[in-house]
Amino acid sequence: MISLQEQTLLLTFLVHCFNSLGVDLIREQVQRLVSLPMWASLLETRLEQELKKDKRYRKFWNVVKKNDGKADEETRKRNHFERHFLASLIKRFYKVLDLSLIHI
Image (cartoon, rainbow, N blue to C red; front, top):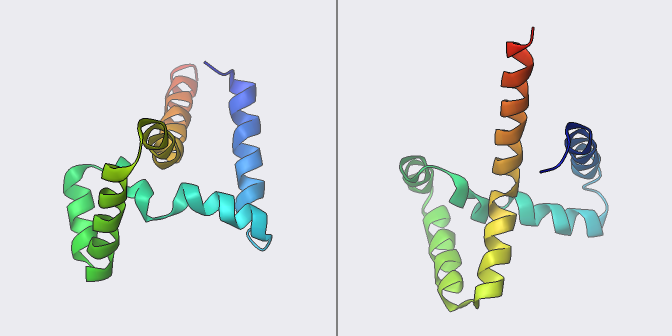
């Protein structure tokens, strides 16, 4: 478990990364965290709702699932981490906010 200070530093770092998308190296890495495959962290009903909005989303999502089926275990673990990283960070942030409100 990382400390609150470490979490704050991580969030600050990510904000700086998202504000630096003009740099190719940063954009390439950040896109791995915010591309369509991260929708894997959505609830199934919400995912279906989003995929219905545009046929291209469904087509790309099917490619992602197909590639996941072909991937080795290590690649699947890395993909899972990347796809759920921001959602997990947001959930931790909400927990910190909830704890902060309790102590007010």
